[in-house]
Amino acid sequence: MVGPFALQELGHPADPVAASLAYAQAGADEIMLVARSTPPEVLREVVERVAPSLSVPLACWTELMTGAQVGELLAVGASRVAIQKAALADPELIATCARSFGSEAIAVAVAAGGVDDGWRVFEGHGGAASEWDALTWACVIEAQNGGEIIIESPAGGAEGGPFDLELLQLVSSAVARPVVAAGEAGQVEDLFDALMVGDADAVLVSSLLHSGEATLSGIKAFLDEHGLPVQL
Image 1 (cartoon, one colour):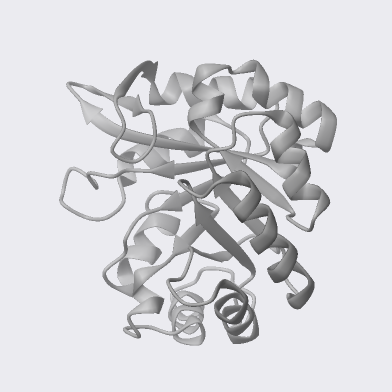
Image 2 (image 1 turned 90 degrees about the vertical axis):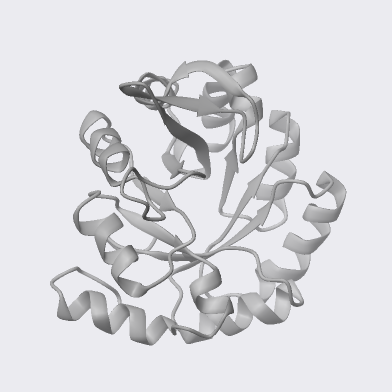
């Protein structure tokens, strides 16, 4: 991740090579391909096509189940791989991948929602609830040497926003690893809130850009004007 703040881009419905190159040229600090239901061999082919075209790191958010599959993506050009369900099923997989490929190459995505007076981890977006409390799971990820924690709140925050700002803030305070906010921001102010109020280290930006409602340069200018460090 470049600098103290990074804009990462979720998968685009258009050709991934053209879309990734366009967003990189527009100022994205990192490109993230979200391919949670994509077969490993297809994702590997996409990474092989996309990575050589980019001047910025390429990350993948996927449902790979083995360390070998993670290694294959890193070998063909991915800089970081985010796992999710596989880590819940076997937390030791995080440590195994970190030992094999380096902590900085391994991220763990956490889908969490408010339950009673806490947060429950779910087995991916729209998945079943697991036994894990979100804060406890974030600490386990750090203990297993995961390099980055992506916090996704499918139901949004308590106030109806796209990010659960309280959860982001608590996780950011509980761990020393970078925390990335994932959510469908409806306006640039939502990104500011995730970074400033939620204390996230980075934010994923998707439909806000895909829809044309905002540009990377506009987002960065807004955040810079409001006191957040960005790479302009």
